Length: 222
Image (cartoon, rainbow, N blue to C red; front, side):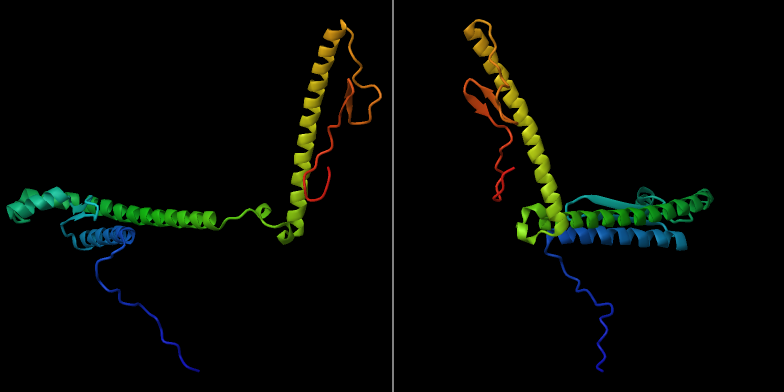
């Protein structure tokens, strides 16, 4: 049996990413990783760090311990970190607190990154569903299963019942209007509306209304 070569970790070629969207995603992930490593360096070694990064769109992001301003000021003044006892005492007091804050920042960044990835996955899944979604009742009847056909028949029955009820209402209203008009023309007598009619029909003035004869296609009459 021939042993399949292991893929392992493959080296990624370091070159500019041409796709703009992929480049922005890569920047966001690498920036988070850079800030996380800097935070770990501050916690483990007590180092003072300042990082300023500009995104491809020109937006600035920064990370600093104890702060970007203090590290930049010290760098510009070329001052010694041990320039005074007051400075040492201040650093000794602020160090543990800043270390704890950096730890919280790292945890929050990891949580935010996980939530962001979860949101991106949900958006991608929703986009895939929208692209491939096709309602079962849009397909040919020959391709529907038993349960789908039963649901389809129930839907048709419900629509038929609603149409029937609405047709009854409209026919009754039309009959009443016709009766009122006939009474006005004959001087007050109301023509009989429901004499000698078949079930489900309205007779008036020689006109016959049959409300329950609807053709809904598929070779059936409902």
